[in-house]
Amino acid sequence: MSHIPTRDEVIEPENLVYSRTCLLTDNALSYCPGCGHGTAHRLIMEVIEEMNLQSETIGVAPVGCSVLAYDFMNIDMQQAAHGRAPAVATGIKRLHPEKFVFTYQGDGDLAAIGTGETIHVCNRGENIAVFFVNNGIYGMTGGQMAPTTLPNMKTATSPFGRDTETMGHPLKITELIANLPGTYFVSRQSVHTPANVRKAKKAIEKAIQYQKLNKGLCFVEIVSNCNSGWKMTPLESNKWMEENMFPFYPLGDIKVPK
Amino acid sequence: MKDIRLMKGNEAIAEGVIRAGCDGYFGYPITPQSEVLEYLMANKTKERTGMIVLQAESEIASIHMVYGGAGCGKRVMTSSSSPGISLMQEGISFMAGTELPCLLLNVVRGGPGLGTIQPSQSDYFQTVKGGGHGDYKLIVLAPASVQEMYDFAKLGFELAFKHRIQVMVLSDGAIGQMMEKVELDEQMPRLTNDEIKAKYPWATTGKTPDRERNIITSLDLNPVKQEIININLQKKYKHIQETEVRFERIMCDDAEYLFVAYGSSARICQKAVLLGRERGIKVGLLRPITLFPYPSEELAKLAKQVKGMLSVEMSAGQMVEDVRLSVNGAVPVEHYGRLGGIMPAPDEVLNVLEQNFIKEKNYEPHTH
Image (cartoon, one colour):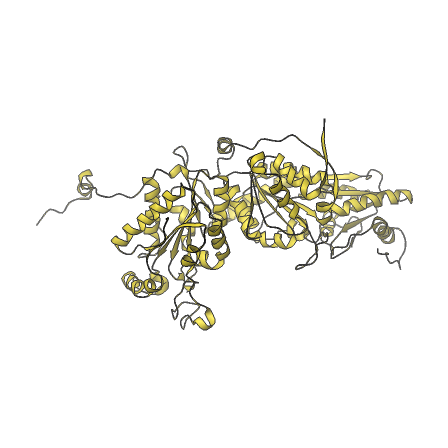
């Protein structure tokens, strides 16, 4: 029988090819297994660590699944009321223009209750980064219809599918804010495959780097799954996302600096 | 030489916050307080002191910008009038839950709804008893002059940071719009970022290796912990009740009858006291300056001395409940108020006092 390496043998320095960023805390993530939030958190924190920005960063957590983002991100953070993260970030950035300021928001927060704040923070060209996780559903409250829920998609409050006649159309807020002169860099990514994770990290890096230029707001949407809310296995939800979400929310840069 | 100027109440508080070393103002126009934002913009505060002034897209955004700035340990404020203050209640509750200091100004107009742009005091309940969700209180300062509009800027910031609490200056359309002379202080310097880090170790200023990360949040899903948070808040309010009561006694020493009034109504009652004295009525005025903490002890003492109290408010009777709670049945307490933006006249309130406590029935106060 071949030798099964012990844990200590496995974590020998020469075997270490990857380690968790020190900007993620030891707290167990509160996200469902299979959800993309954890990866999105990791990428943002990795970039902040690699750019040596921990002491220069103030983050704003929303209301929604990521309401407890501050439990996992080892940086100074403020938790905002539902939809108000862009206003909170504006207050921080205006008084600390030298700091790196970002919001981390879901689709209900950013594109429904906080639409006004989202449009105006973009239109003012606040020099902040907005990370927008769009999974087409209200995850935290138990799977209700979101502004980004696809037509005919079933949720707890559209149990027979989203009827666009009576429930309105999914809102492509990212395309909308890309049209505003105050946004500098707008990109839509996903984190469901290693290749997509690498692309998403590149976009997050740009959003953070560009803030130093004071040229306007940088906005990165991450189309993500919600296997619990969609009532699928993680693998099924990723497949469903590729087949249904991506055609409606196509991945790639939407607005890049000239 | 003293720096004395003729100013509107709204301009006076705007000048007051600049001189008190305010770091940021976030607001949205609404009558009758738009002069605050206009004055700050016209005064080029960025050049004068470095103070940031931003016109937000709504009152909701304004109060959450204040939250963000306050969370960084900065001296920040917003101002509005009644309908706008209603919109801000969400953010005020969040600031109560996170114990963030800030200065708020309500230049009250008549309600409900859009109501009117004329002065009123019908937001007493909203301001003193809550307004937003949850068990919280604001320190409420009630200016009765343009000078106090100016003075309460500095006092408000001092109290806000001393107790990590939200301070509301509860003014009204009359005090905001009228012009009086104001004596100004020297400019106070704004705190540097290093001073803020040293004075306010809770502020989000960027996590450095020498400390744990700072989190501004009102969320704790564990009810046992949340109850402790709430109990500690209540301890703070009790301490404030014990230490920060402010009031003014006007001809109370020999008074047999008492007006209780704040803000514009106190100015009217002050004149009514003089009219009453001319008529041979020994009447005084107790003017609460802080509405929370309320001068309950002082009223309880006066209840042993006077034969009746008349609470005069430009509302249907809100503060009168606190007067009655303070005297606890020891003396008759009546209310007189005008509604919807109408201000009572001094002889009108004096006649009501006489009718209630001195003359007999069948009296109808004349109105102007």
